[in-house]
Length: 325
Image (cartoon, rainbow, N blue to C red; front, side):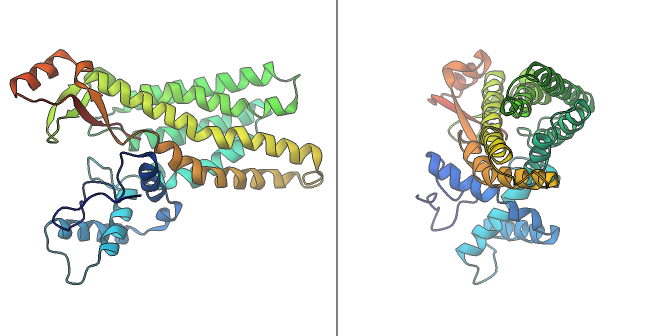
C-alpha cells in the first residue's frame, strides 16, 4: 500500500501515513491509531512526540532525525490528540483504549446477562464508557453542554436496559444461545440513540465543510447527518463480530465440553479474551469503512453554502468534512 506523497521530500504531517482513498490504506491507518499499546505511553512521551512534530513542521527538527522517528511520533500523537482541536484526549475516550475498554466491558456484559440487576449494571457501565468515547471524539470544535451529555447518556442507557430486559423476558423460554445475543441487540439499539443525541448540536447547527483548498465555506447540517450516520454504522459493525461470534463459541464450550462445569468463574476471562482478540481486528477494520475526511456533493448541501461557492467562483463538486469517530 502506497504511502501518502511527500512535499519536497518531506512527510506530510497533515495526512495519514498511508493513502486514504482505499480501504486497505485506511485500515492500516486505524490499526496504528487503535493500537492498544499506545495506552501505555506516558504523558511525557506524548508531549515529546508533539514537540518533535511541531519542530519538523517548522523545518527545525534535530539534525539526524529519521523518517521512522517522525512516523513514530506521528503515531503517538494521533493516538492521543484530537485531529482538529489538537487537545490531548481523556485516556478512556481515546481510540487506543477501545480494545482494552470494550473487551472488558463487553465480555463481562455478555457473561452476566441473565438477571435484571446484572443487565442494569453492565448496560449502565457500557453506556457510560460509550458516552465518554462519543464526547471525546465528537466532530471538530462543537461544544456539547452538560445538559445534552446527560440527556443522551440517560436516553441511551434507558434504551439499552429496556431492550435487554425486554428481550431477556421474551427469549427466556427459547434456546440459551438466543439469550446470549440479547446484549448485542441492546448495544446496537443504544448506539442508534446515543451518538445522534450526543452530537445533536451538529445536527442543529451543522459542521464545517471545506472546499478544495481546505478552506471552511460554511456549516452544513446535511454533512452532519452524513457524518453521524457513518459513525453509527461503524460502531454497530465494530461490535458485530465479537458479539455475534462469541455467543456461538461460548455456547459450544458450555454445552459440548466440560470446561466450565466445575469452573464457572472461567467463563468471564475466556469470554473477555475471545472478544479482545476479535476487537483487535474488528475495531480498526470498522473504523476504516469510511474516510475520516468524508465528502459530500455540493448539490446536497444547503443553499447558502452553494451561494458562497458561486460568489467565490469555486468549481468544486464535492466538499469535505471530518466525520468524527
